[in-house]
Amino acid sequence: MPLKKKYLELVKRYLFFLFIMFMSYSIFILIYFKDIIVSIFLIFISLFYLFLIRIESKTKIFIKFVKLFNILSFVLLNLIISYFYLYTHKHAGVEYFYLCLIFSIPLFFNFKKDFFSVLSISFIICMSFTICLFFDCEFVATSRFFKNQNDFKFLKLINFFFLFATFFIDILFIAQKDLLISNLIESSISIESTVELLKITNKKLNSQLNSFTIKEDDFQNVYNLAKNNSPIFMDKFNTLFPGFKSDLLNLCPSLIDSDIHFCALMKLGFDGKEISLYTNCSVKAVDSKKYRIRKKLEIPSNKNFKEFFSEFQNINSLSLAE
Image (cartoon, rainbow, N blue to C red):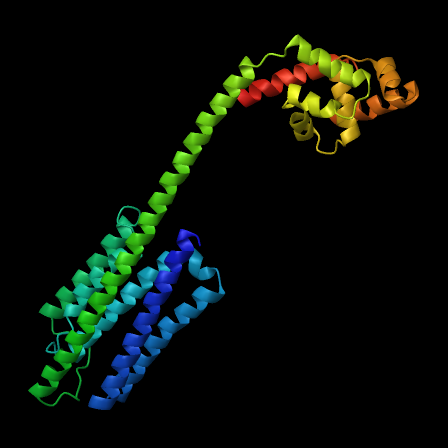
């Protein structure tokens, strides 16, 4: 599974955690304080995160705009924390969730690549906390369901429970993200070492190829096999000229075995009459075959086959060396 897909799976699990947390909190508010409006609001927030999970699974939009979704999620969470900080008369420990929100930033952003986004989100969170702390913000209605100090103590206890749970989940998810990054680094190092090994092997093969010389006896043996139309001719020819067949197929994949056999004979210097004699074909058939091969390989009419194959092999040897 690619790293990006694994990371999106990690984000999806975190969104599911937010869904569970807000849903649980909404149920608690409804049961203990009978605050139906706030409870419904939290339920809608939890369903919003469930919606994000769904679109992550069903469409590529989430993948394309994942950073934007992350930024919007942080802004939304920041507004929710600010609202409940004021809603609970600033006595329920809600302000500690600002720290939790900042602590979760490494899960969603890369500090080097997303420096501006991280800086912007951190600034928004700090400004929200400062404004809520030092200003009354009377435009936000405070809750009428908190009747005594015990209500605040109990809610603070619940908030601390959710706070520690969130810190634990954040640490767990950040550790998983670090593991993904470590695996990517190890994979990159492994690929780089493999590439270096292949480069070294390629240099050795090129060196061997450049130093390879055809012995006269070997050439004469293959030459005689061709004259006798031996069935093992092509095997011995391919041993003597190891890159010839593959180079031809790279140049023209439509060549068939009989075409390559004719090319091998012409590589050895046989003319049309000799090929006709040694392959038991008419001169006309050989000429027709040579014409079709010339068209397939796009050989100019002013260039003979022996000259072409000599230049062709030299060009491919140089390309391999590079």
